[in-house]
Image: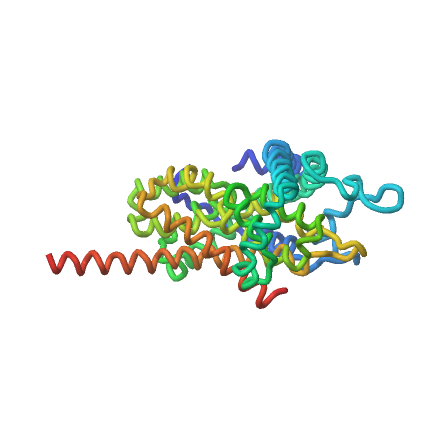
Length: 222
Length: 154
């Protein structure tokens, strides 16, 4: 895969992206018919055993409780990655790249050619790092740009896959009275992570700028 | 790509779900189990309480009990492990749903950085002098995210 390939983005790809955003945002979470378009609704709940509590039971601890609890995470992880695979198949990520590439310069001072590596890095750290290395070797990124881009990737690495394979399940927790425990949504959490990834990259951008000035000043004195 | 589009949507879903199964079996279950064992060990030795007391002045700034620090420390090693710690502390009644909302983005922002130092910084070839700055940025991101979540969304 070239680090900067450019494929055509169709209307269908944008629809897939819009669907992805709506599906994971939590906005349509409901037991009405439109709940069919919501991840948490379709993810469902475990049944209860003997009238109360689910198969994990209550009051356990240590390795055994950890194992049973971890089992409860697996269906959410499988469902989320299955859906992400389908949305990716319909070009949702291609559309996201098309929309985000022109924003890379104003947001982080990076060229649009880094779009593919950026989207890749949201799914898999090794893909992101490999594509970034290619961009450096092809001369698409200079050292400073590469370092800023690395800071973006390093914080919340492989955000989408990591979050949906473990963090999404936090939003299915219930209180003792059966109400949802966590008062925010998957969509808000992903949005906050994305914003702080960009802020972190810009913090490094400022640090590099400050260091550059210092080096220049020293060079002048010498 | 032309070949890929001939696949049935159900096959595409199953292929992704299989990836999810592999992550679940190979990474989530062992990591979460380890986290539960660590919590149990910290709990019976009284170290969890000590950790909570030690970090309380810091964590209070972001609306969390001191034990929340254990989640962030766990996250630096493994994101999945940190989620396990959250679940353990939730079952113990130490963390509430509101605390989890504050912690959720923070876990990932500094998550698995020890592993990713090799897999991201190493592969890209980041100069050694930037490593501490990269780690510091991730931890700062986490604290800023917790601060914002606590202030505006919980």
